[in-house]
Length: 310
Image 1 (tube, rainbow, N blue to C red):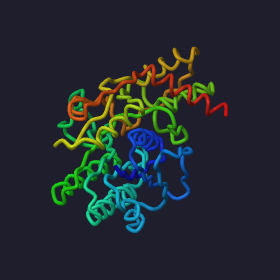
Image 2: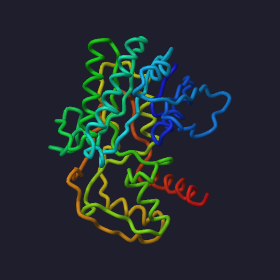
Image 3: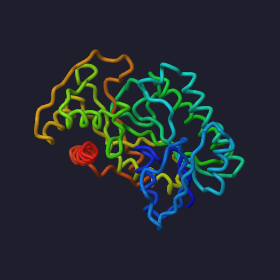
């Protein structure tokens, strides 16, 4: 199939593109201006790399010309900073996605796979693990915008027949994660630990998250691309919760040396615990996570160590 991946050059996107290429798909990667390919592609890999503006109808129309499926991974904001400028969050993410959906209608593209946020769309959990029927009460603009995009995807599915698969991904970690954005506790903690610098923890370290290795995330997207069932919204997660203190303990055990910790006041937007029920994805997508947390941390540490010593 011909697949256009919006945001295919980043941490999550590049791993998904690599996974889709293994299935023999033709890929068009759409990225921001001045973002170049993350690696050299082999002659047998059918990849077109283009840059542009997601707010440009011309650019997105060109990107989806003759495509079969759109994979939408773009987000211009982060959960921790999205409340600082919610208007920008809405304009650059929600409005841009509506431009994309209208272009898909015009070009008769009949399927979209969208990355939503399992960590923010639900808000404070009423029960754990959180399934797809749990109430959605986001505490940050990032989660509100993701949820609004989900609703529009389902509207366009109903109105125009564009099949929407929405993957509410837990907390992804792994190779190619950018530590400079301070997004992603495992990669950030590992980078600090490898450099023998103190780790900064917001709160008392009991905040619990559902961490999922990036290879397992990519596999879920590969399954969603092929999925032709009736369900639309899926939690993509490990199904297990791990606290920040436990993460640091695992890193200490893997690296073989103690890590200095600096505890800071808790942040109001941090949900105390987020663990997602992945039963629906297991049943419908025939997907399940394969990489356990210790193995994933070891692989991420090896990759980060190589980056530091380059």
